[in-house]
Amino acid sequence: MKTLSFLLKKEFLQVFRNKLIGRLLVALPLFQLTVIPWAATFDQRNIPLSIVDNDNSSYSRKLADKITSSGFFKLMDYIPSHEKALNTLENGKSRLILDIPADFEKNLVNGNSPKLMLSIDAVNGQEAGLGLSYISQIINMFGAEIVSSNEHAVLVDVSPSYRFNPEMNYHNYMVPGIIVLLVSIIGGMLSALNIVSEKEIGTIEQINVTPVSKVTFILGKLIPFWVIGIILLSFGMLVARIVYGIAPAGNILSIYTFGFLYLLAFTGLGLMISNFAQTQQQAMFVILFFLIIFILISGLFTPVSSMPDWAQKLTLFNPIRYYVEVMRLVYLKGSSFTDILPLIYKMLVFVTVLNTLAVWSYRKTNG
Amino acid sequence: MKAIEVKGLTKRFGQFTAVDQITFEVEQGEIFGFLGANGAGKTTAMRMLCGLLNPTSGYGKVAGFDIYKNTNDIKRNIGYMSQKFSLYEDLTATENFELFGGIYGLSRKEIKSKTEKVFADLGLQAQRKLLVKSLPLGIKQKVSFAVSTFHSPKIVFLDEPTGGVDPMARRTFWEMIYAAAEHGITSFVTTHYMDEAEYCNRISIMVDGQIRALDTPSNLKREFQSESMEEVFHALARQAKRSGE
Image (cartoon, rainbow over all chains, first blue to last red):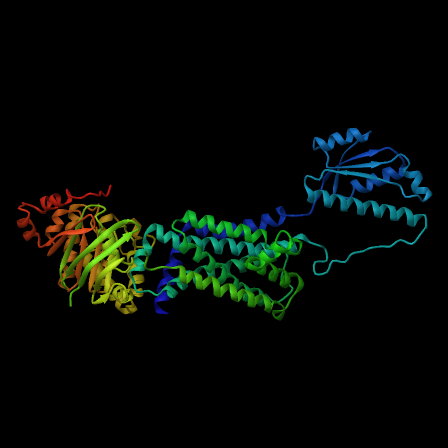
């Protein structure tokens, strides 16, 4: 234990004397938390739209007004013919074409369902899907207004209520996940590069000829990154509160308890990689590989439930997935400690396995 | 008890035999020179003795402990200064002493008093608060030696400790080795400087992984009918089939 205190002092001195890392520890969280929640958004606005109005009636213009004033679409042009409109789709000037037939108003007034045609550029499938759903909603609402003003049939009114995130606020959903991203990237990178950098410089030799035990040495590496991770976690939550006004609905202690374990697991992974690598370049590639895969299948950007079965099974081995889940549960749903207990048990398995491997893969004697 | 006892020690990397059946003994308190051209196998042999590398075969004891089974006991009783400068450059000399003293289990009080003594002996009071990376090479090497002997080991292994250091600094460095020897610390030292070889009690010369000569400098000169160690070394190194370059 006494030996450990000497090792810890050394690690902390080194981290604080490393100017680049010190700056990165401030710059990265700020950048990630202020830029990504805005940039990595699925909200789609200003989809370029062209309208072919063959009817040119008051109703057709009313519909066009409704669509263009919604904010989701940007009206590029009124185009006289469908063929010409298709050209704008091909050259990318518009992504969506709405054809209003000549007898639109007549059919509406007579109570026949008029037919509208939508042509959508589906290269960006996400944008196409969202565009379709937005425009359909607007058209339905428009139809409903006409019908109710004519006092015809009773309409089925679907009004969704979004629980736990009432305004469907994208930030509420993304920011807690991005805090996970933040601590994972910094914790993973720093730990993965640490031991291998001592190998490159040669200082590890001087440690390896001492009687220091493997467990003590690994603990001496683990604890500093763990502490840095906890500080970053707190910093991230503070920024979320100040910049986005997001505070956890549940108990903050649940987030910390899970975070303690999560960071232990992730640092263990980094240290293990560092032990296997011979150069910092190798270590960097391997940790990037894990980080990218883990982040993409974490459910942070795309929901786990929408993945194919085999991919969903893969996510079971992804520690980031569990913390993203816990953060959202506690932040949005206000889940209690008992609710996340099963996830805590899973994380304990990660902690045990990864850190055992980290100690095992550290070799004081080679060959 | 001998400080070091080695019989038929061998290290093979695949097809390549880096160290080939070496046998020798080192007495306690002796300054033992371990010579050889680049690539002769000195560093590999030394790394096996320090418990950094597992031998392929052969027998070896360091400070009375088996090099296969008791590497941790060996590590408690030796100091090591590697060829590559390996102190923490982003720590001060004082912090390096504290770290390694702590790892070897010295108390904070012992570390403090020893640090004072080392700085006084080396005359480095002015540099004690400077980061190691800002020190000149000659001083770095002295600090490095002080670290490797800080915990008063029985044996200190020095792998080309004076490489690249100016003649004045080399001289004072050897004074440190002699001072350590007076305190009963055995020195096992490799070098390419033949004037330094003369300072050793006994020397061995390795060629192609084997020890080809082992005696006191004066006996070796007599045996090879040479004026200097330089000539003895050349006579042996010429036989080498493999080259370090």
